[in-house]
Image 1 (cartoon, helix red, strand yellow):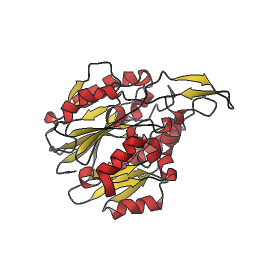
Image 2: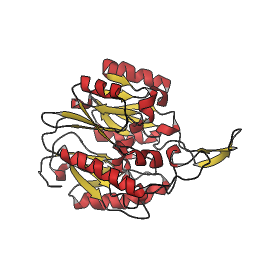
Image 3: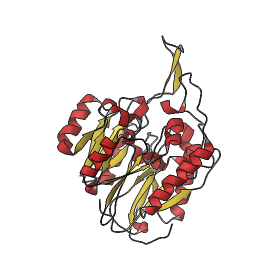
Length: 319
C-alpha cells in the first residue's frame, strides 16, 4: 500500500457502548442472555487504540455517540472507501454506505453526516441487499475479497443440550451484492470466499491482508469453506499465513494494517502469541498490540471492527 498522504480512519465514540441486539455469538452467554459491558474499561481501551493510531500518524475522525445506536463503535461496517490505498484529494473519494442488519440500520445517517462534514462524497447501494462494508469486502494484494455466508433470521431454536436451546446468528453479507461491487473496483478481480463459523461472522475476523501492497494474508482455515480455502492457498501461496486456533480465537485476523513512507505496521489485538508476532516481523512489518478485549468479549469486535478505513488523502489535516 502507498501512503504518500494522510491516512484517515473512522472511530465511534464509546460513551454509550452496550450490547443491544446481541447479534453475534460473542454478545450472549451460553444461556442466551446479553452480556454486560464494563463501560469505563471499554472507554479506557478505546482511547488507548485511538492514541496508538494517532502516534502512528493516522488521522482519527470520531463519530459522535448515540444512545440508541451503540454499534457505532464498530465502523468497519459503515461501508467501503473507493481506491482506499490511492492518495487523492478528499473530494475525489467516494464512500459507499453499507446496508446493515436491522438492529444497526439506524447507524447509516450518522456515518453519512460525519463523512459529508469531513468532505467525502457519499453514495449508497439502493437495492435491499445486505452488505456490511469493509468487514466483508477488502483488498488483498491485486484482488478484492468478498466474504459472505448464509443469512438467517436470528432466533432461538430447540437443542438437545444444556440449555435446551441455541441461538441462530447466521452471517452478515449477501453474496448477491457481488454484481454491485464489481464495477466499483474494476478492473480488479473480486474473489468470493464463503464463511463457515458464526463466531467469525465477518471476513475481517478470519482474514487480514497486511504489509506493503497488502500482499501478506493472515487466514483462519476453520472459518472458511474448504474449497475457498484451497482457492486462497493457490492464489497467495507462501504469502498466506495460517492462524492457529489460539490466535484466531483472540481475533488476530481483526487487525489493522498501515504503511507509512518508510515503515509498515500491523495493529493487533492484545494477547496474540509472540509466535505470530514474530511471523509478522519476519515479513518486515512491525506488530503493535492494543488491548481492546472488552469490545471482543462483549460485542464481538476487535481492533479492525473498531476502525473504518477512509484511506489516503493528499490534504494534510490535523486530527
